[in-house]
Length: 303
Image (cartoon, rainbow, N blue to C red):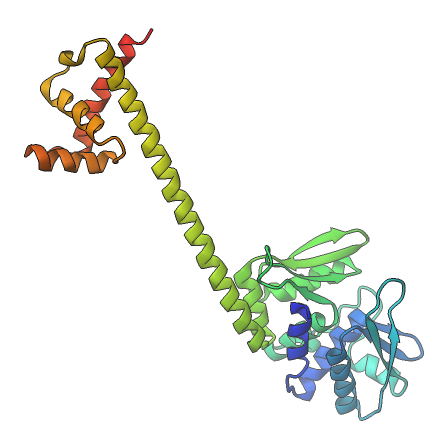
């Protein structure tokens, strides 16, 4: 079962009050409803179909009809159709159903609870969310109208979710890619079980990514240290081949001897070793200065 289905199944079981049900139904019929003399609502999710049936029955005291059929073409999923034949005009009016772009009146989303219910209805009807175990975080809604897409994005961004709109073929996608914002959306929908799962995976992935970055950074530092030490050893070898080691002052010659003796240690570690073994304290900066003098002499000897 996909993560989208898991979330929809959980949200479909929420207990809500009638005013919230109206907002949720408004979003559902707007996005997956077919309106003629009757209202038909189509979904591939059985839990969503049962919720739609219950919302209509409880809100309007009528018995909608549910039929099931196989998907067309290569789609083997079942399609659940909830059909409303009674009170069609009054229900559409109540739900603020209008012609395209079919943006509802403000009373549908006028307070926080109603707004959350409307967003819940949008997700149940056309929402899709990646499993956090996958390589990228992604939540999207696909709609058929640019104005409505901007309206949905504006509603989402009421909660600072940073949603964006992108044209995809002849439709419009409202999407979010920030892991924390997607978690916030699950919280808004009160999908608590899905949220706990999502946050556990997200925290694990973030920790793993941070560890990998630190390891990569540490490896890069080690590689750089080895490259620098090898370069210093080549400088010392050049000076020795030319029999010019005695051209160095005693402290610089000492640095050359210790670099050869400890070829794999860092500059900071080498300065500590020299300080302990000779009894003459030297800083990392001071050692760097001596090795720079070695490099300058070796450069003059190279053809």
